[in-house]
Length: 477
Ligand code: SF4
Image 1: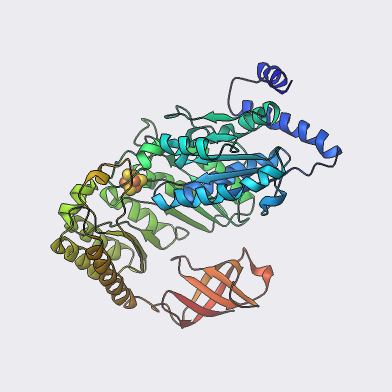
Image 2: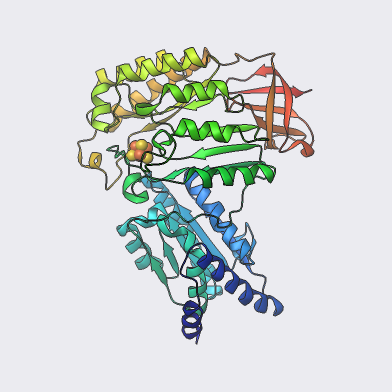
């Protein structure tokens, strides 16, 4: 019966996107309206595991679910639909997902109508999908990164047929725009400018699971940003695996600095950030655009990964120790107040003490405001996974030395804005203390200060009274 109904619905579905998905959203809505009349509450939960891309996918899933008539809950025991969006960059993220879906078994046993679905990077890996199907038969919905936009179609089919739906695409030819998305914060939003990556760093799984790089149409990006500003968004973060190569896959498209400049000029946009630029193609033009537009935030996250030219070559990063340091010098000349952060991997296969010393030298030179440091861990499916590992005790010891070294050199830049009055975008209530709020400076540094909840989402002047290293205590003026 369900299958027959779905076949009928399918026959009338428009072929074009996004009209097709809006059609399925309406069908779910109609179905839920009937069930709601019988006391059904229609609640859904979306759990994000992983990076900012995954978080953005989570917002898209929530947007579609809400448009279809679901209300969002944080409690799995009251949800009728539970979706996970996953990340597979680190292998332990996979274990986290297995733990979570294992815990859902008892809920499914109590409620056989519960629909559990998983999407995201991890579902682009065949072995993981097989494991889920074998070990967690109560997961009904599995789809990958290229077809997230089809949630409504898959969900409706599962609701009506009660059968499993698994659809994984190797790549997608089109970027489907203008589907609903539900922002986590009313005042801050992330906007994808491109999907996938062409770089094939030898430790990274992203190009295999997210596919080749595809830039969105700049007009579509601008339209989305404009609508966000009109909706009260003060800060936009542009997202891409390598924002610097934006547009290179399309003949007529503008470059990243041109796109950034156009967005920065949108009336009413207070802050604009981007993530992540690759040092290999960071242009002078980009620095100029940052300098000329005050609302572009004073922060650059510039992943180093290693300071050794030999290791960078093995990593396939396409820059050297010298070119990275020259770039840092140039950045500091053009933007002297910029906050510079980075990512560093310690113990990449083949890393010698000499290579590690090169990393230490670049850290001392760059004086990062902060650094995300990782001990190299093998990521199955990447070229580096087959290479001989550096002994664990050596990696651990280097890692400790690096942490201390970073701390020492970042101290030189800490507290440099002490006593100044700076603009803070107020993000939330302080988790630690009553009557306190937490917000961020343009350079991404956190500030805690006393204030009422009504300030959340506002940009307010705050005097920075006390430096605590990575953050400040201040008072709102
Ligand atoms: S640039 Fe390298 S590290 Fe970043 S997503 Fe692409 S392959 Fe992975």
